Length: 128
Image (cartoon, rainbow, N blue to C red; front, side, top):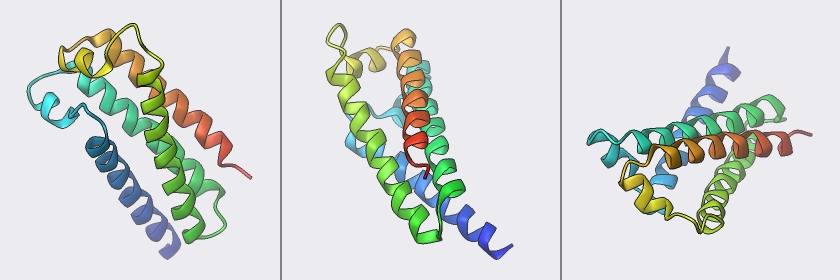
């Protein structure tokens, strides 16, 4: 029971840290936009949350210790952030930041599915 609670606490802590890091390192401030009713921002943030959760699930399920899980969870969070920047760079047809601020739900859904897809791929890469 103690191990479960420790893994849960560290996983939830990493999830919060991951969301915070994504919020402060990206141009789009989803929490502020969601407070204004921006659906595209909620899709993006929901996708990031689910993508991170998938990565953290994999680290918890495949780690050999709590420290191992925390290290690989941190690596997974960084990978998610880097891939978001790559996605923004690789989408020259539209400006991601402006599209989300304009509540372009198509872009929001695309980024949601991108985050989940990348989370699944990163999670697979974190298995031994």
